[in-house]
Image 1: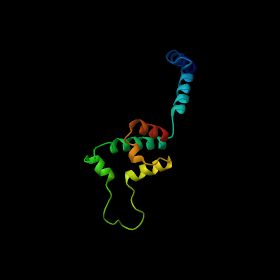
Image 2: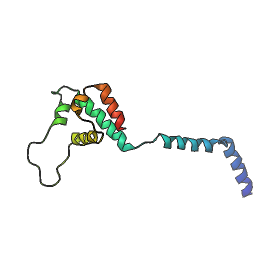
Image 3: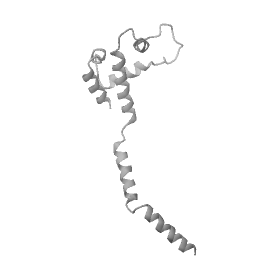
Image 4: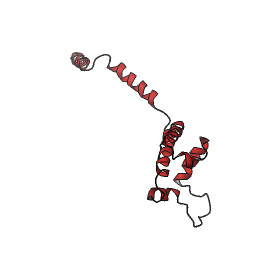
Length: 118
């Protein structure tokens, strides 16, 4: 009796799910694996794009003032805290980008630099 119920349930499942569903799912997983890339490089690319956006703003805009701000008072001893722009400048150094403050005003050149980071 239990075997009969099992077989009828199995037939119903086969009607609902065609046989090639499994292969379609595995193909989808393979495509997703091919499309994935290094998240660290993606974040670097996005930071560089944002830096270009901020640096093209007028010097009186709050976002630019905050980004370029340097603390004037002495910090506690130990490793100094790193600002966001320091991280991005370090990324630009690893890409061997010099004179980035001038290059960021040219959108096409800056987008190529951001793509290079990705």
